Image (cartoon, rainbow, N blue to C red; front, side, top):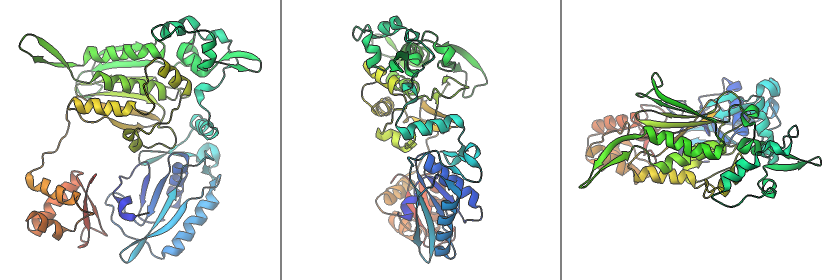
Length: 451
């Protein structure tokens, strides 16, 4: 592990900074959350917020104490890598936690009901029974929508509805219900799967009352005044075009005047909207209860959110790289057969490409509570204007592994004082990271964000 590389990462789903071990309970919760979610690193000896490297006294003793606490306090046992990272004349204790196949882990003192946590952004959230059940399924390699529903007969899946959905693709035979795992053999009987009922169930909403799409158009930038709304309760494959149509109905914001005719210009690329809706429907956690999939259109953005965090083992940084783990295999397989999914992992990249071609910012993903939200913005929002000297500083930092203040000043031809002022401003704007032992550290180095 390299301390500088770790400190250049944002504190969030995979990084936690602790000044010391004065509160072991917080560190242990984080270790549990990392093991249950996507892994991560705890750095002890670094201030949260400022990222000032304070170091620790007696690092070997602290390393041993952390190892004992983790071993004695967490069940099933977690085996992190614990090491010392040198920083000048001090050390930082690094606890590297890996995603675990033994999920769910929990604090032994609190027990499994109260002591299991997952990582949401930069916080640890208690994992309730539904989330712990998903962890166990994930550890066994099972999908929720592949589970049989033995209390129902096979005809709970509406074959006519399924055949109608497939009519533009191919003629659906009754045997295809088993092939798509819409129905399965269970204890000598054919019964529907969760996915079969979600997709084409005759009484779908009776069994899964939150498996629908709530769409709304709001005036302005918040939810204080709603202009239009609709409830889309169609089967998921039909819900996609209906939701796209709602967004397109309210998504016109201007016109292009040509030599012959006036052409409406859409504020959001339809490809990006469609892919975001498909992802929400396919990756939703339908075991959760309390809220449907939501589509909210504002003057400056579209928000689509679905129940369920990212699939265990994934982080938000994985999404733009096309890394994908399918939560619902039956829904995913059926959507692919219907042509709603082209290739696994490619939908996010198509969204990004469509936004880029339209001159719009890239989509933004965030985990909120136990839900995942993607935001598509209709215009560049909050872009910071940088003057030529600022840009010269960023270019100089981007071409190196970090520079001190004097080195930056020499590169851009400014005094040390003027350079410090500009660097401080760029740090505040989120364009530059600084790493050092404090604000008065003459050896602190500056790095371009994303450089």
